[in-house]
Image (cartoon, rainbow, N blue to C red; front, side):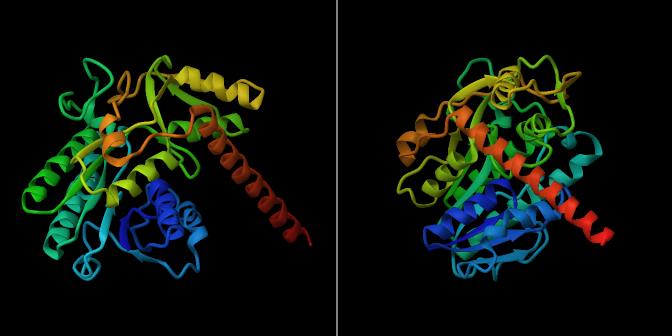
Length: 328
């Protein structure tokens, strides 16, 4: 089996590439190494695949690079490349979201349809729901009312998928709910909380901390994608959520218990575009994929906390070695 993964050097993409290679797939990763966060971090995400004969990396931007050669042998496709983040999508920053989310997705769908690719699994988001009138959210009848331009781009990508599905391209949209775990982007809340809990900068809490999230560990998210690639019959859009809701204040308390000290927090006003709650019904994914989330929130937080701590210790060791080298 062969797969092409866009955004392969990112948080979810790197875990997915490792999982598929470990299961015997041939994987081509595509990543533009955009400056949203450090290139060195993305290269570190792929460190476990260096020298792996079943994995090759193409440094390219899906929004601009020719795609026909990449898809000539009709691989399965996982499209994860996107410009992330809610706050940055407001104002003039929206131009980047138009290119990296909408244009890139349209070009990939177009090329995949032309090549006759058997399926495209692409990343959507719980952001498409906005503030729902009732929870949990259901794919079929909960209205999609995004509260940010970012959410609008994800909603539009689902509409693009409908167009190309009508032309014969099988597509599956994964509405991910607050994915966390090792390799999480440095701007994301759980990563910043773990940094604060291990001696880093204070965590900036926006709002009163009562906002609730349906937390999903990256291993569960990847497992859903792998199953979606090969499932016989599958719905065009699926909620992928961990099924364990918690408020930000509850997560802060839990991390404090795990580290033995209170997480230092600074409070700020509520972020524009933020929603009160996310929670998704995952019945379709459970029935259609034979999938269910397996990582409990406490266990998942431990994996990210340990990863952050290991990174910090490695950085300290490197700094000491550098100082020692200069002194000798």
